[in-house]
Image 1 (cartoon, rainbow, N blue to C red):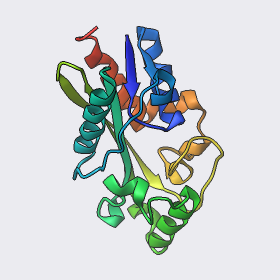
Image 2 (image 1 turned 60 degrees about the vertical axis):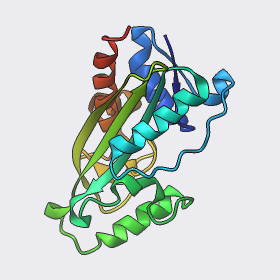
Image 3 (image 1 turned 180 degrees about the vertical axis):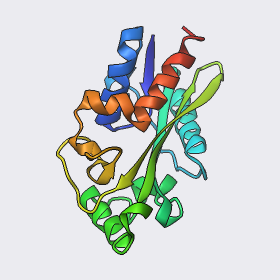
Image 4 (image 1 turned 90 degrees about the vertical axis):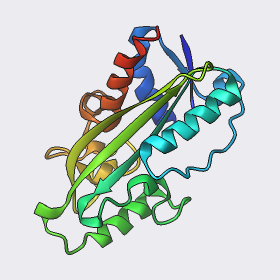
Length: 195
C-alpha cells in the first residue's frame, strides 16, 4: 500500500520507511509521486492538531492516504517550550545549531536535575474516504550542556535519553527508543486495521 508523507524532511521519510516497509507499506515524498503539496500553516495548539492539518491537506492534494508528523522538544524548565514551536523556535529559518545555542543559553543557570525534557511525536493518518486517526510517541530525557554527536537532526545533539545524546545513537538504536519510533510503531499497529 502506498502512502504520501506530508513532509520535505528526508530523515523523517527514512525513519518511516525503516519501520513500515516490512509491512508492505511504501512511503513517498511529494516529488517522488508527482504531487505538489500546498503549504499548510500550522495553526494548531497541539502536535495532534498540526499533524491532522498537514495530513488532511496532503490527502486532499494527492488523493492518496497521507501520513503527517508533528514533533517537538518540550523542556520542563521552559514551561514546555519550544513545544509545538520547535521548528520555528528562535526564528523559522534559523539553523538548528543557532536554535540549540539559544536554548542552551536559556538553560544556562538551570541545574542538571531540572533539565528534564521530552520529545513528543504525533502522527496523523488520513484516508481519501475521510477516515483519520492520530497516534503519539514520547521519549523522556534531559538537555545536555553542549551539543554532542554527528547523527540525527534537529535538537538531537543536546537531548540525552541516556548517557549519550540522540546524535550519538545509530539510526537503529534511535528508532528503538525515540518518540518518532514509538509513534511509528503505534501507527504500524493501527494500520493493521486498514490493511
